[in-house]
Amino acid sequence: MRTLGTTLGSVVAGALALAPLTAAPSAHAASTAVDPATGQVTVVQAVPGAEVDLAVDGRDRGSALGVGSKTGPLELPAGTHRLRFGGAEGDRAVTTRVTVRPGSSTDVVLHLPASPGAPPVVSTYRVPSTPLGPGKARVLLAHTATVVPADVVLDGTTVFTNIANGEYAEADVPAGTHRASLVATGTTEDPILGPLSVDLAAGTATMVYAVGNPRRGSMQAITHVVGLRADGSVVPRTIDTGSAGLVRGAVVPFTVSSLQPRGRSLPASRP
Image (cartoon, rainbow, N blue to C red):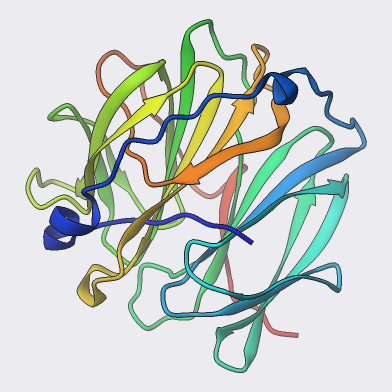
């Protein structure tokens, strides 16, 4: 399994002195057809301090997975699948179900809720599949950290406000180098995440997850990049992972999705 991350306040100064992420789809990935009877699922472990064992439909898919680990993409048949996270909450397992659509790409993220001390939750995020214009890249920023609702700041301008835990904003932006930060709603100082820079390649989607708890110094930025075709469909290969920022300059306005239909947070359930 592999993974993603986040940053906050004074932690940003050190932990976020990171190199930009450059993502470019390979020729092989762009030319390979997606099996119409399956979909891709990538599982992200975003609970700091936990070592998690993952099972999908009863089959072991990873053990002792630390924060930032990412498993997949897994090619799963269309339909409903059961995921079990062992060790995320002491001796009790966290379980959830995810519905896979033919040709889709879905991230399943185990993370902390907004309330400190509360048990982990699971959120699912489908890669937006609307057509992507020439020279454009797609960005999705999800709030999966134990922090208050946040605003997205692009080049010093607040472009979206009040994103709560489990929600996300997305935008199509010109390919190239961009910069952004996440701040507590109504503020402009002491970023929760960033400011970060990233090189976004045309024809890609970058999923960015803010995770951790700033009071415990565990904030990090987890990213997951996939290739997209011009029609918005996902090419069947993960490109890269790493730490990344968001966008700067002219963008399609951010939209928010509050848990349904593509992003949803579920309380921890136990067998």
